Length: 97
View (cartoon, rainbow, N blue to C red):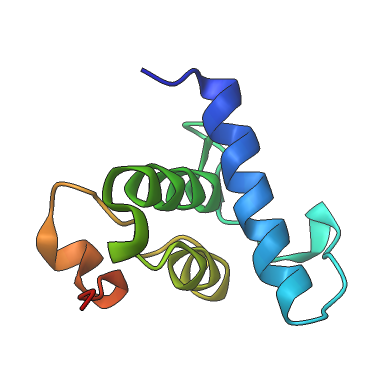
């Protein structure tokens, strides 16, 4: 079982890799449109990124982790992938030949 810190570092690394690959500057934390529930203290984007990292670990090359992380940022964590729900991860799966 991975610790929270390990998943956090993995998700940050994945998001950073996605941004650096396209030559874009890293966004400052306050400017990426963070979806945060002040009542519950939930950061939906972070949960989304953590789930992308977890699915990438589970499915390896069959899962497009970069595309998943980009969608977390683009849609501000509104569609959180669940590695055990094929419908939520279907857009990020690919078949290896």
